[in-house]
Every structure is written in C-alpha cells, then in structure tokens.
Image (cartoon, rainbow, N blue to C red; front, side, top):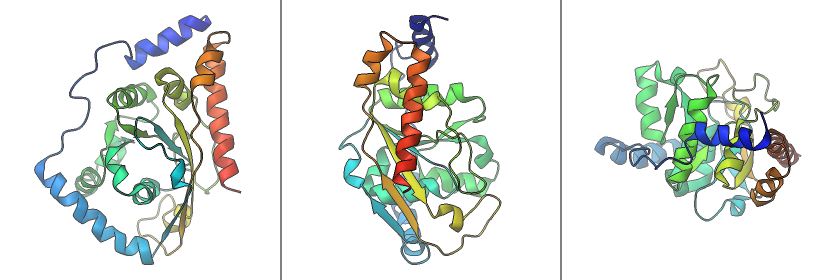
Length: 241
C-alpha cells in the first residue's frame, strides 16, 4: 500500500470526510448531570487525604479542545486522577473504555456518572475506538486514550500501539503526553480496595501535528504514525524522570 493509499485508508476508516453525526456525543440524562458534581465532591475527600493527587505542568494543556490526552496506563484509577487534575475541564474529556467495565451493573452506573465514556466492544478491535475518538475530536471535544492499549501489570510503561499516531496525524489535533505515577501502588491490576499512596500527574507540552502532516507528504504515512507514537512514548518517559 502506497503512502497516499495508507493515509486515504485511515481517513475512510475514521470517517473523516463524512458529515459529522450530530449524535456522536453522549447525551446525559438528568440524573447524570445532577450526580456528577456530587460524585466528584465525594471522591475529592479520599483523593485529598488517602491518595492525594499532585499535579504538574497543567499549564501545558491546551486552553480549549480538541486535543488528545495520552497517558501511560498502570491502574483503573488513572482516568479519575487525570479528571481530578484537570478540574472542570474534564467535562470536555471523553475516555475510551471497553465493555469489560460494563459487566457489573454497579460499576456501569458509576462509570456513566463519573465520565463521558465511549464504550467499545474490545480494545483489541481498536478500529471502532479510533473511529469514535475521531468523531469526538471533530465535534470539538477532547479524547482520553491509553496508547499502551492495556494496563501495565508492574507499573512499567509498555510499548505503544501506533493507533494514537494515526489518530493524531489524521485529525491534526495536539497530542498531550501525560505521565501518571502512584496509581499502580494505590490500585494495581487485580486489587479491589485502594491502598494509601500519593499520586502524581504530569502534563507535558503538546506535540503539534503540523510538522508531521508536512512530513507525511514526502514520507510513508505509516512511518510518520509510528514516529509520532514513539515521540509520545519518549516524552512520557522523560516526564517520569
């Protein structure tokens, strides 16, 4: 597949040249709008004292969406930490999640209260995830996506999948590297009850896509997607030091 064919393929897959579906954003029910502020007011107490969240580099977050927040993934507590770190701005943020977290009715209820979740069947079938993310970005919102594709079992950063590079380059929106530490100690994979430990959320400077879009004109598109993905991973690792 040639350079332009690769880019055209992904644009078709992401439906970037189709009219935007006006129903792409989740419509919240009345009870969700009422309960969300209450939910965050309640979890603010344990977050402050049991596992306080310390935030660095929040000034690097673009003033307005669309943009992509792409953190490392060590715990199911990661999104809550980023949402707390961004304050009211998390209302514009749409995390991509799988139906795995919807199997439990109680968890499903609170997930819908806590976040603008976009549900997909499986993170392994990432095409629907990228398509949903692209539509949300086109609607002027922000997307939260884990480039590793799965949680780390030991807190270390895993290899990144190139899908985040495809999404960033083809939509042209800024890609914000975020490093989260401490959540693995609070709630590692397999644990139900959190443990006390501080959490640190560090926002890096956005990776702008203009240069990569230009490079794509004279280079293989997939190479550019991979380059963006690797730059993102390097930026996140740098934030961890």
